[in-house]
Image (cartoon, rainbow, N blue to C red; front, side, top):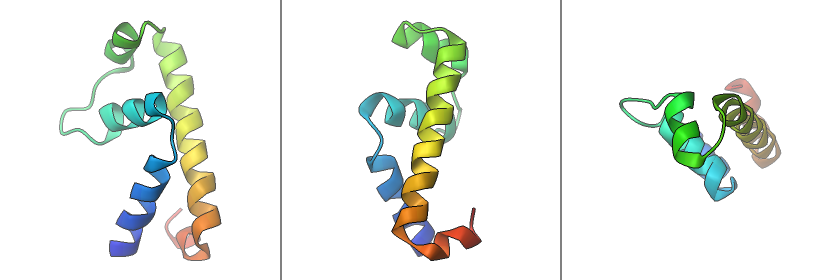
Length: 75
């Protein structure tokens, strides 16, 4: 579990600030924000926020896969 936390922190740090903000607000808060509320704050449609979130998760997955082959057990 400690390795997983380290890998996830590293993967999140490789995101650009906007991607990191979206992932943090949507998945790492006790009360996750909606696509709509993030879109309003960022001046984007909720669909665009969803696309950015999906791209961020793909970037995180690629980063995790290149970090360590053990990650495949978790993904």
